[in-house]
Image (cartoon, rainbow, N blue to C red; front, side, top):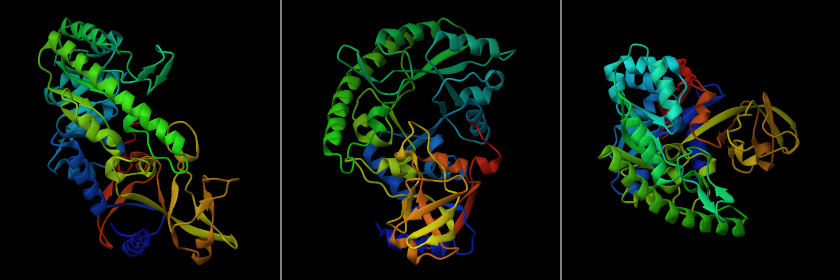
Amino acid sequence: MTSPAADRARYDRATAHLDAPLALVDLDAFDANADDLVRRAGGKPIRVASKSVRCRTLLERVLARPGFAGIMSYTLAESLWLARSGFEDVLLAYPSADRAGFAELAADPKLAATVTVMVDDPAQLELIEHARGGGTEEIRVCLELDTALHLFGGRVRVGARRSPLREPEQLAALARAVAARPGFRVVGLMGYEGHVAGVGDSLTGRPLRSRAIRLMQATARKELAARRAEAVRAVRAVVGELEFVNGGGTGSVQQTAAEAAVTEIAAGSGLYVPRLFDNYTSFRGRPAALFAQPVVRRPGVGVITVLGGGYPASGAAGADRLPQPYLPQGLRYDAQEGAGEVQTPLLGSPADDLRIGDRVWFRHAKAGELCERFEELHLVQGDRVTATAPTYRGEGRTFL
């Protein structure tokens, strides 16, 4: 692994002919991260979370590698677009109310064979049925298990509020409802344990909180493994063998892969390794996706101002959702201004070595959301740009 200073020099040389702002993906780091995900998955295939990549070129690149199979999409419109683009086995990870999209899905044999939709409520089946129009194709359905950890008799909940289906018998009941409705078939089950896969367990300067997170996650993994296995058995008793049981995420690949009931792992952020994935004891990836903002002002000693940069990530608001001034190391935000809409002041001794037109390289807090800000990604190998790939935005696709 190269040093941050060496990476900065490489990125500056590679993009010297380009004007900032710009975004790049270091393909050597991207490929190394892909290899590490496969290693941690221990032989189980990885389904790529497209929301964390949002670039068809890079989706194609990773899916061409051994150990990766299928896409986990985030909207029905995106799912249909990817299926029409030649991607196979697309699992929509979130319920949809896209009636026009369901009409397209039910009317097209190829789309219906490629795309699986998420259901956790009979009302969603009703919506799809009413949206069919004249479409008669069978709709492939995945059921989602609520993975949240309940403590103290359910008075404390740890985990995302996603599916209402927590107990195995609830999943079995919905599986029966799907089986009783012509034109639908249950093919899979999914459970995303975000409180394990998406929460770092080694927070700098916070040893007690880190220990508490590790204890919570160990408890959550044990509880979920047993409940997920029961849920799979319950659903199989209704519909027979399932094509897939999906679980996990970048931060829990090896732990989720160890569950016998799980047949595939979901991951995507681990390819780019944004700043929120720096705080894990179980793995260490290489930052692969960065963006550069040009220095446009020097307000004083120890201060520079870059153009733009106010790209906060989704989730609960906080400093950890801001991009990280990454290269040169040692820059920080002004607490009174933070990351600005059209300009961002940065403080620190490295500012005195930067001149107008120089670049500051940032890491986004989350993975694919960076691509909503840029139309293209410059793909870097060594110290040169070898290709430029459009993001979803660059292809005129903004799904959410």
